[in-house]
Amino acid sequence: MLKIDGLRVNYGGIEAVKGITFQVPERQIVTLIGANGAGKSTTLRTIAGLVKPSAGRIRLQAEDITGMSPDRIVSKGITLVPEGRRVFPDLTVLENLKIGAYLRKDSLEDDLEWVYSLFPRLKERSWQAAGTLSGGEQQMLAVGRALMSRPKLMMMDEPSLGLAPLVVKDIFSIIKKVNEQGVTILLIEQNANMALHIADTAYVLETGRITLTGTGEELLNNEAVKKAYLG
Amino acid sequence: MQFALSIFLSGISLGGQYALIAIGYTLVYGILRLINFAHGDVFMVAGLLMVYLSAFLGSFLSPGAAIGVGLILVLALTVALGFAIERAAYKPLRSAPRMSVMISAIGVSYLLQNFATYITGGLPQTYPALPLLSNNVIIGGVSTKVVTVVTPFLVAVLVIALTQLINHTKVGMAMRAVAKDFETSQLMGIKINNVISMTFVIGSALAAVGSMLYFTNYPSIVPLSGSLPGLRAFVAAVFGGIGSIPGAVVGAFIVGMSESIIKGSPFSIFSDAFTFALLIVILVVKPTGLFGEKVTDKV
Ligand SMILES: Nc1ncnc2c1ncn2[C@@H]1O[C@H](COP(=O)(O)OP(=O)(O)OP(=O)(O)O)[C@@H](O)[C@H]1O
Ligand SMILES: [Mg+2]
Image (cartoon, rainbow over all chains, first blue to last red; front, side, top):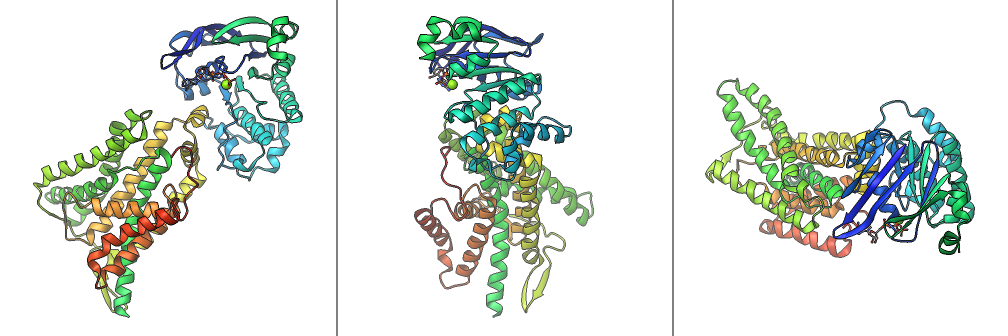
C-alpha cells in the first residue's frame, strides 16, 4: 500500500534518515523500532508531509505523494498520531474529534459513534477541554481524532510513551481492533516488546538506516533484537 | 452633569473605535505571536481611501451614492491591503526568528506612512461627512454626533458576530487550533496560510469600520493619523491580555474612557502619557493583562 524508496531527510546539515526503503502492505500492522534519535519520528513526519525529503520516493498505492503538502496527504487517506499526543488543549473533546475530520464534508455522526464505541471514556467527557484529560485519555483522543479523518493508513508515533502498563495494553488492543476493521497501521515504538507482538512486519531502524527486517515473531526471537531492544 | 455625560459619551465612543483596531492586533498576535506594527497605518490608509474614493465617485454619482459605494470599496480595499501585507511581508518569514518579522512589520508601517505622504503631499485631507453619522443629536442636553451614539452598538454587534464565528464555526475552530499548534493543525488537513490570511482579513475589515467611525469625529487625516490611535489600541490589547478578544474590547473601553476623562480635566496635556503609564502599570502588576492566557512557550 505504502512504498518508501531510498528516503533521505536532512535537517540543516545533519542527515537524520539515510536512504531507507520499506513497505507497508495493505491491512497489516507494520512497526519500526529503534533507539532514541534513530530517525523514526522523522520518517513519519516526512510521510505526513511536514518535512520534505532530500531524496527518495514515497508512493501510496500507485501514486507518487513525495513532497505533497500535509493537507493533500490527509486527503489521500494518511493520518499521523503525533509523538506526545498533541491534542488541542483549549478545544473540547468533541471539537478535537471534529477537527480530525476537518477536510470531510459529509456527516460525522457514524464516525463519532464509532470512535465513542472504541473509547467510551471520550463520550462521557465530550464537553471537557482536552487539556484537562489524563495522559491516557489524551492518547485515546489523539487516536480518535486521527480516525475521524477515516484514514486508510494510520501512522502512530510512540503511542505508549509515558503511559501506565494497563493503559498501554488498552491502546494496543484498540490498535488491533482498528486494524481488523480495515485500517492499515504503521507504528513506531520504543516499547519494542508490545509492538513486535502485534506486528505483521517489523523493521529495525538504527541511526538513519534499516538494519533488520522480518515478521514481528521473527524479530522477537532474534538475538540481536533481544539484546538491544528487549532487555 | 451635562459635562459628565459628554465625557462619558465621548469615552465610550472612543473606546469602541479603539476596540475595533485592538481586535486586529490581538487576533494577529494570537495566531502569529506578532505585534503587527503596520495595523495602525492600515487604519490610516482606510481613512485616506475614503477621502479619495468619495471625491472620485462624487464626480459621477450622487453624493449619497458616492458615500455608500465608497464605504463598500474602502472595506474591500482595506481587506485587500491587509491580506497583501501578510502575503508579501510576513509569510516569506514564516520560519524566521520572530524579531525579523517584527522588523518587517515596522518597515511596512513606514512604507504606508511614506506612501501616504507622497500621495497627499503631506497636506491634511478633509474626511467626507457621512450621511446620518455626521449629523448632530442632542442627548440629555448634550450635543454630539450620531456616530458617538452608534459606535458602541455597532461594536457590540461586530464583537458578538466575531466571537460566534470563532467559537461556533469550522473556520473559527481552525483559527483556535492554529493559534495553539501550527504543526498539528497541518496534520488535521488545515491550510494554515489560509487561516492566517483570514485573521488579517478580519482585522483589516474591523479597522476599516473603525476608521469610518473615528475620522467622522476628526476634521482631517494626515499620514501619521494612524499611529496614535494604533498605539492606544495596542495598549488596550495588552491591557486586556493580548491574544484575547474580550480583553481587547474591555481594554479599549478603559483606555478610551480614561482618555476622555483626562482630556476633560486640567491635565489634558498628559493624556498620552497617562495611556502609557497605564501600560507600564499593567505590565508590572499583571504582565498577562486582564484576560491574558498564561505566557506560553511560543512567546
Ligand atoms: N527539527 C529538527 N531539527 C534538527 N534536527 C532534528 C530535528 N528533528 C530531529 N532532528 C534530529 O534528527 C535525528 C532523528 O530524530 P527523530 O526525532 O526522527 O528520532 P526518533 O527515532 O524519533 O527518536 P525518539 O525515539 O527519541 O523519538 C536526531 O538526531 C535529531 O536530533
Ligand atoms: Mg521520535
